[in-house]
Image (tube, rainbow, N blue to C red; front, top):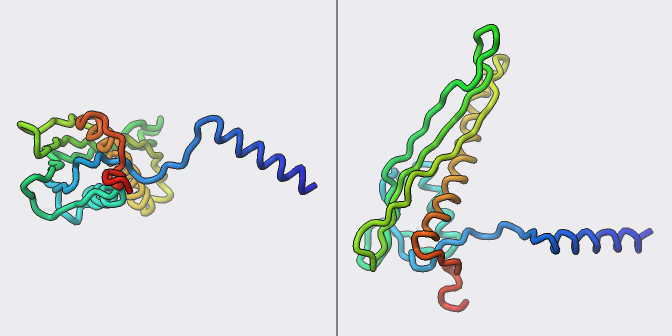
Length: 176
């Protein structure tokens, strides 16, 4: 019985590895960003905190003030909208849609001007439960956290594309 279980698990591992599956790992920010200054948001803003955490976990040095020879991620606007998505036949709200939009630009030390990163948008839909009105705020907060993570990941992709598609993690820039 143990042999069959071991054989099955081995085949499962090979199948998963063969399909290209890999663990998410650390975020892959371009090495040439370091040091980077993030501007345009309060330092207590949840999006700011997630962005800085993502940059630091990838080995990018985040500074509190602009530096000569450093990069800057400038957040031009971070907007949120909540709108009614569907209504029941009894004219009661059934679903909401939360939308977050991020507009930003990147300043690199060797660039002539800012590189616009464009507008990024993420959406989440949730059902309204009239029996759990107090839980709706908690649900919205959870969705905002997920949306912020998605925006950080999308921003990461835009920054990589704007810097020439660099794929080397910041921790690997010195060969370590």
